[in-house]
Each structure stands twice: as structure tokens, then as C-alpha cells.
Length: 82
Image (tube, rainbow, N blue to C red; front, side, top):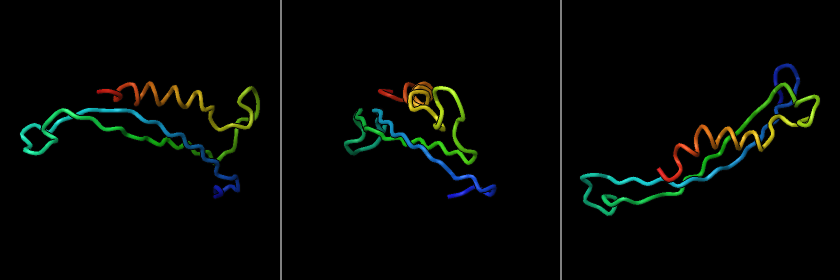
């Protein structure tokens, strides 16, 4: 895809997984008991203006290490095993 200005759209996607538990109070089925699920989260970063021009991240729209840290702090750490 291309942006209106002619710049290409660049997309990076990273998948994360985490585990959470819950129970359905008052439910008569097996979900009334505490149980867990594994969830998958896909985070997509898109840039229409291109990539970083200089430095160690030259050619990237986002460093996977930075993306992992941001998602871990803001989402995964708050939900994992909760």
C-alpha cells in the first residue's frame, strides 16, 4: 500500500502470548471453577513516512526490542497470570 504522498506503507507485526485465569460465579457449568486460558496478542506498527534515516535503527520503523519492552510493560505484565 502507498500513502497519499507516494510513500510506501511499511508494517511490522509482533505476536505475544500470555495466560490469564477467571471463573464464572453462579454459572452451573465447568466454568464456575477457576481456570485459565492462553491468549495471543498481535501488535502491528505501521509507518507511512518511511524508516529511520540514521543511527543504529537505520532502516527500521521500530526495533523489535523496543516494541517488546513497550508491550510487555503496558499490557502483558499487567495481564499475565492475572
